[in-house]
Amino acid sequence: MRAVEPTLENVAMAAAVLAKGGLVVVPTETVYGVAADATNPKAVARLYEAKGRPRENPLIVHIACLEDLDRIASHVSPDARRLAERFWPGPLTMVLPKSDLIPDIVTAGLPTVAVRYPKHPVAASLITLTGKPLAMPSANPFQRLSPTRVEHLDPELLAKTDLVLDGGPCVVGLESTVVDLVEDPPKVLRPGAVTRGEIQAAIGRPLGTVPPGGSKGPRRAPGTYPRHYAPHARLVLVDRAPEGSFALVFGEPSGPNQIRMPKDPGPYGASLYAALHTLDARRPEAIYVERPPATAHWDAVRDRLERAAAPE
Image 1 (cartoon, rainbow, N blue to C red):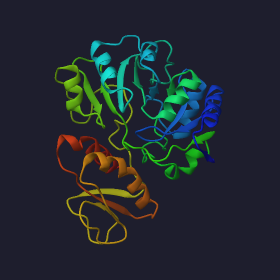
Image 2: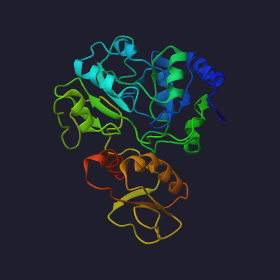
Image 3: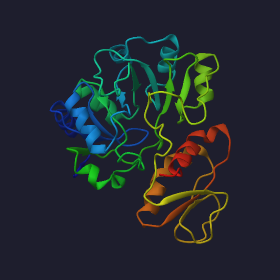
């Protein structure tokens, strides 16, 4: 599948593909997604099949204006409106009661829907031109590394899509924060660039906590499997990477297969998947990753690494 630049003409072509039930790979500020018309059950079924994704794993619905939130959700709480006004467009997904507009296949049969308003201009333009909300999970095979560059898209997934819009590297590099606003108090189901502290400050009260091992019952959001975001090589978290190993390190690399990572969580997250893709392409048996600090600012990075290192 040839990638095209996101010119107005090509974005319009992508909108036409989606209107016919097709699949389009789209850049966002977090990671690349593969999109389908969220109101078209057949297109969404094709999306699940292309990713090899279980039907019990709900999809995030993407919109391009705040007004569309009331079309997607049957009820929008005051907390949800505060978060939308504060963080949208941006890397925050909210789980809310769903409206009848969204088919059950999108939400894995649940009465809730995960909604996001992406900040990337290409994604926003595409949603606007399509005139429909888009179901858009990360453009990777189920449980594998997400792509933050077109060159890291999986060939097998590409063969099942109709068009790729190349928007360059993703600036955030980690999937969105997911906050569940159905229960009270709200809970963060997946950490991301919008932090727990920022969410609490915006709603003016503490968030609830998800018990170890995750919440009981059906999954209301993606990215909550124990194992996820994994390279083909075994990922091993260590305090210090073995000399000469395939590794992501904080200090000076000890060989050509080690990549020095930023010591700030933002730049680290933005470069994490690209670095893992680079090493994974060399087909090592294992990739060693030096543990990031155990502080709140590193929650999203630690979450991704711990899931990637979980046993199959």
